[in-house]
Image 1: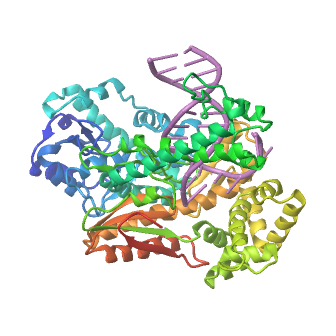
Image 2: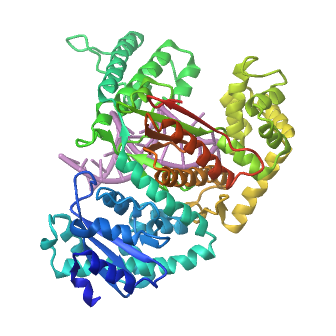
Image 3: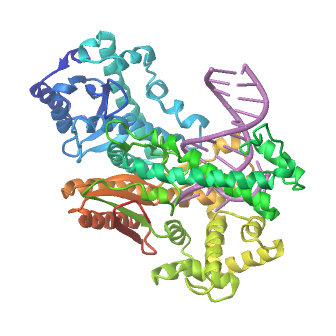
Length: 587
DNA sequence: ATCTGTGGCGCG
DNA sequence: AAAGCGCGCCACAGAT
C-alpha cells in the first residue's frame, strides 16, 4: 500500500489505478466524511481497492468522476454499511445506477441471524469483522481523527494509512464471507440486500415530505381531545381522588401503578391496565381511561417531538432505515419511525407531495396469505386467489357457516381476517377465544372447522416448523435464514420456537419481495428517466414521490416491478398490487 | 442526573 | 396475564 499514502487528485491518476486493479473480481470502497449527515456534511476521501492495493482519492476534486468509473459496467463494489457511503456519495451527485453492490455488514447480519445475541450493532462493526475474518487489528482510536476534519489537509499519515486499512479489511472480510454465504445458501439474500441498499440510501437521502403546519393542527386537536378526556376521567375517578388547593387532581394517569390503585378503589381488580382488560370490565371509568390513553399516545408519540426530525435544510423527514431490522428479515425505521404512523388517520394526510408533484402509494394485497398459499399449496387457498376471490370472506363463511361478503355479515369477515392471521402463526384455541370473544369450547370448534376447510394449511405449518427446528433454522423463499441458537441459549420454550418457525418464513419472504421490488423500482425509474423516487416503505407498501407529469408512468413502474418481484417467489397464485396516485399518503 | 428494563400501543 | 409474529417510541420505575 505504499502508493496509498499519496492522494489521487485527477481523473488520469484514478483511471490509471483502476486499470491496475481491473482484473480483481470486485473492489472494496469506503469514504471518509466530515460528519454523518449527507445534507450537511461532505465526503473528503474516497478509498477504493483490493486486499493488496488501495487508492486514496480526493473526493471533492474528482470524487464524482471517480465514483462514476468505479460503479461502471457490472463491477461488484463491496462496502461495509453501504447505505451510508452511498448516501454520502449521493450528495456528491453520484447515482451509481448500474452499481452491483454487496454489503459486508448486511452479509454478517444474514450469516449471524439468530446465532449471536449482539447481531444488531456492535457485533457487525468492521473492526470486529476484520479481527474475526482476517485477524486484522483496526485501531479504533485513529478513526476518531476523521470526524473533526474539515479538509483533507487535516489528515495525517496515520489517518491515511488507516483509511487504506479499512478498504483492505472490507476486501478480505468479503472474500471470507462469500464462502460462508455460499455454504449457507445465502447468496441470493445477500444480493437482494446489496441491491436494496441502493434504494434505501436514495430513499433516506430524499426523505419523506411532510406538511408540518397541517401536522401541528392535527396534534392540537388531539391535545384538545386529551384535555376533554382528562376532565371526563377526573369525574369518573372523583370519589377516589385527592385534589390540591386549586382543585387539580394529583393522579398521574401515565403511571400504571397509580391507575391500578385507583381502579381497585373503584372496585375494579384487574391484573394490568392494558386496553383489552380495561374494556372487559365494562366500567365507564375504564372506558374513559382508554379514550384518554388514545389521545395521550397520539400527543406523545406523534406530537411536537415527531416534528423535531424535520431536517433544517430539506424540510423533510429523513428516517433511518435498518434494512435487516428484525430477525425475520423485515426492515425497521427510526428517528422518526415512518412505519407506525396511524393508519386511516389525519396524520397520513399530512404527508403531502410538494407543489406540482404527487405521492403514489402501492401495496401488496394479502401478501402473507399469498405466500402461505404458495408454500402450502393448500387447494382452497390457491383456488381462491386464482379466482380472485375474497379469502377472508370464504374463511368466514366456512368457519361461521353463514354467508359472508363485503355486504353480508361484514363483521364476520373482519373476525375471519383476524383468525386467518392468528392461526397462520400458531395462535391456540385460548388466544382465538379471547380474540373473538368466544368460549374456549366454541373456539376449539371454530379452529377445527378452519383447519378442516383448509386441510393443507395446518399440515404445512406443522411440518415446516418441525423441519426447521430439526435442522436448526427457518428460512424464507429467498433463502434468508433464522437460526434458533439464541433462543435455545435464552431458554425459549418449544411453543415459542414453533411459532417463530411458522411465522418467520412467511413474514421474511414478504420482506424479500418488498426489498427486491425496491431495488427494481429504483433502477427502473433511473433507467427510464422518470422524475420519481421512493420516499417510504412499510413492509408490504411502498410510497413514491413523482412529478405530476411522470406520476402515471411511475405508478405503472411500481405495479410492474412489485408484481415481478413478488412473482420471483410466489408462482402458484397471482401477486396483486394496488397503487394509487394522490396528493397525499393514503391507502 | 443518567441508564436500563418494562408496559403499553402505534404499524404491518 | 406467556403463549399469534415482527418492530420503535413514550413514560414510568428502579437502579446506578
